[in-house]
Amino acid sequence: MKKICLLTAIAVLGFTTIKAQGDFAEKAKNGGFYVGANIGVPLSTASDIAAFNFGFDGAYLFEVIDNFEVGGLLGYTHFIADGNYTYYNWEDDYYFARDYKDASFVPIAASARYYFADHKFFGGLDLGVAINVSGDAKSGFYARPKFGFDLGVVALIASFQNVSGGVDYDDNYYGSTYISSSGFNSFNFGVEFGF
Image 1 (cartoon, rainbow, N blue to C red):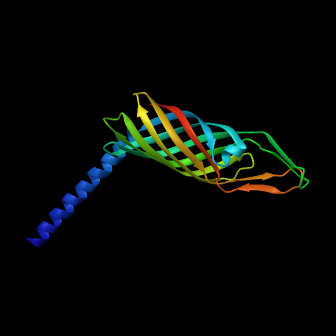
Image 2: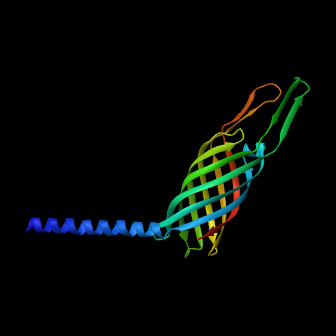
Image 3: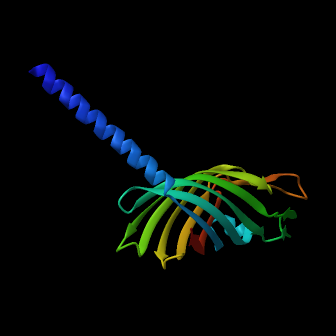
């Protein structure tokens, strides 16, 4: 009798596991593709270097439980430099000049979002790495918490973007290097289209 109960429990557990894996695979097939674009204002030390930020990204998300989606994200974000900065201190006879260059990153991240109020509002988080593709910036950890309002096919999104790599800008006059460890931060607004 114990063997029959044990075999029945194993069979039920195995069937439930197979069904759950099938449901997960079905949800993955029925995921949604999202494409977004945003503009932003650089913050912290990034505001000393850059005047403006813009970017776009694409994500594929699928629902793992009710109102909770996960997936992957690939994007591009660009910080437009402030240009040249020069300073001369007459008392110390000190002069330096920096030529700030644009910085571009390709974020590769895991993305998750949770929907509230019948899919009208959502909160999300993208975590991964941002690879520097131009400028004197360094690649680094990428984090982007966001909040959105879903209008159907289009969603409005506000987000905070952080690339932790920092920058190394050379001093054109003395040959020293300006180093910032706080990375590139920005506050962004954007739109997203779901397919």
